[in-house]
Image 1 (tube, one colour):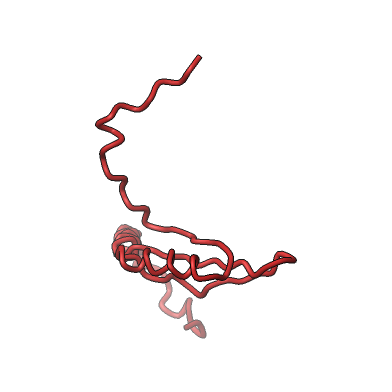
Image 2: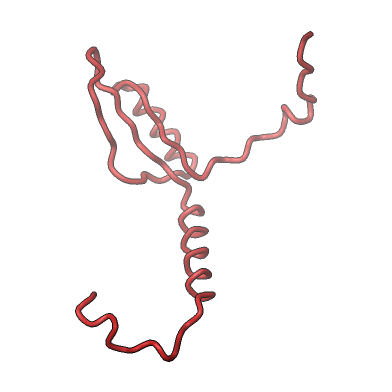
Length: 99
């Protein structure tokens, strides 16, 4: 039995960009071109790159995210904090000594 092909209309639609991507590969020009392409698509670097040696070559990884992902996450945290119940009877010195 052969699986049915996806409808042509679905194939023609551009895929939604992922909010987070981890790009990996050998530490070479192709890897740098992939990172450069992601940056030109609107992604920003997230964290420091990682590198390891697999016994033959250096393998690198770099996370990239869309700036909107940061804004969405920040908004979700702000909303969650706003929705927390505040206990007015909570002693004010309970957090003394904590930053």
